[in-house]
Image 1 (cartoon, rainbow, N blue to C red):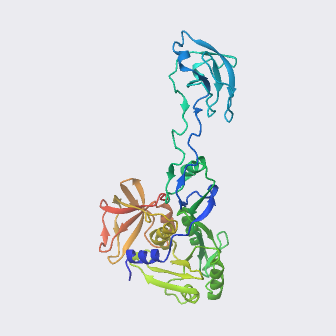
Image 2 (cartoon, helix red, strand yellow):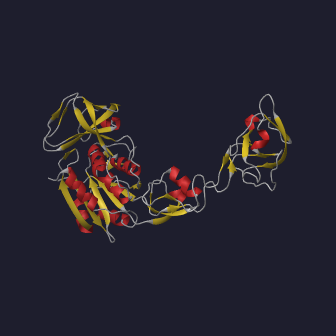
Image 3 (tube, rainbow, N blue to C red):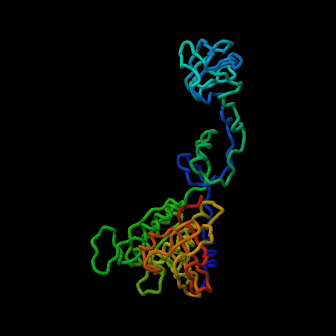
Length: 405
C-alpha cells in the first residue's frame, strides 16, 4: 500500500505542463503567462486631466477664494478623446473632461466643484498649485517597462494592464481540457425516475465542477455502463479532444469493473491501494498517441472528492504551469470526537466556526455521505499513527473554501 505522498508523486510525474499557445486576451483569464509583457507605450500615454474641470495656469488663481472669486473666459472645450488646438495663455481657462489631454500652456486643472461650471466665463472660488489634477505621461508605466514577467497568473487586473500597454494576443499556458466520465451500469441521468437498484449520477457533475474550479476547461460525458467495448470507444474519441481524462468508478476489485481492462488495452495503467480514508483504490495511466494522461477515481462521491483534492487538483495546477500545487494546511481546534484507522490518513469533513476552529459535519465520515460533504468547507487531516482525536484538540486542516490563484 502506497502512502498519500508516494502516490501523489506518481500522479504528478505522469502529467506535464501544457505547451504555450497564442490566445486573444479575452480568453486568457485564469491562464499563466508564457512570455514577458513589455509596455508598448507609456501609461498614461499623454498628460491628461484626472478630474472634470478647467485647465488653467496656477499663477492666475493665487488669490482666488470663496470670498474673492476670479472670473476667466473659457476659450475651448475638451471632451475625452479629443485634443485642443488652442494654447492656453494667462487669464484664460479651457473646460476639460476627465481623461482628456491637457492643453498646451496649462499647468494645472481646477475641479468643477470649485467653480460655477460656466461655459463662456467660469467663476473660480479656489486657488490651485501647479500640477494639480494632471496625470503625467509615463508616471505609472514607462514605454519598454517589463510590466508582467513570464509565469504570472493572469486575472482580471492583469488582463487590464496587458490591454492598456498594447497587447491583444499573448502567449499563455492554456487551461487543460478535461473530459469527465462516470462509469457504472447503475447510473442514470439526474431527473430520471429511479428504478430499484439505480443511482442518479452525481460524481461526474461533482468532478466537472471541481475541475473547472481548479482552472481547467472541463466537460462532462454521459455515464457509461459497465461494458468494456463501449468504454474503449468513448475513451478513444476523447483522446483527440482532451488534455486529461478523469473517470470515476470501476477501479475496485469488483467482478464487473471494466475500467482496468479497458485502460490496459488502450495504453499504460497503474492501479494502487493508497493508505487513505476515504479513497483507497486509485489508478492512473495514459492512452493514445501522443499519450493523454488518464486518472481514475473511486466511485463513492466523497472518495472521488477527496481524491480529486489530494491528487488531481495538484496535477491540473502542474499542467497549468503553476508553482504552488497543493492547498496549504493550518492548525485549528476540532469540535467533535473522531476515530481514525491507525494505518491510514483520514480526511474528515468539517466546517469553520471561526478561522481557528472547525466542527465535524454530517451523520458520519462514510464515503457515501453526500449530505455531510455539502456542508463541509474544511478537511481535517488525521495522520497515520493516530487512532482518535478528542474534542478540543489541535488538528491540521485544509481550507477548501476557495480556489488558489
